[in-house]
Amino acid sequence: MSDLDVDVDPSIRPFTFSVPDEDIALLKQKLKLTRFPDELEDCGWDYGAPLADVKRISEFWAEGFDFGKWEKEINGLPNYVTEVEVEGFGEVEVHFLWWRSEVRAAVPLVFVHGCEYQDLIMHYQAIIREESNRSGASRFQEITGR
Image 1 (cartoon, rainbow, N blue to C red):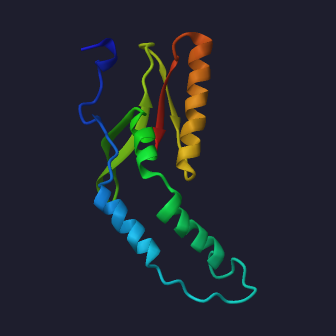
Image 2: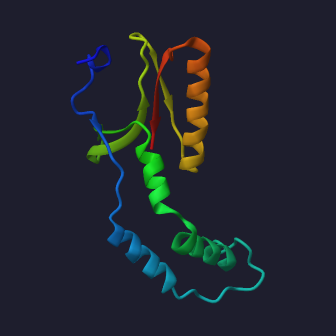
């Protein structure tokens, strides 16, 4: 056991992101078979996303998104899960990224986000690398929640 493993809650477990190929194929098939409604004229965003945007996004997920690339990218990060007690909901499994510092008394630094997950993760990694390069070892325990 390394010094970094001391005092770690045993309910914190490594996590590997994996989507079965059959699920991806089914998603792509459903997207290709989608029957889009007519659009009201001159309503902009008043009644939801414009039809052209929805069609463009649907086509991207069906044809342009590289699921394997992002699965590999996500799994290259330090992924973990644990359960958190949420009032009214019981235990909820929470996924997070945890860059552990070699500094024993490192301060926990939690990044919380709401959307644009992949762009933020790359931004956080840049911050963490810069901070580590400046000090030789990160003085923080970086934790990114999802």
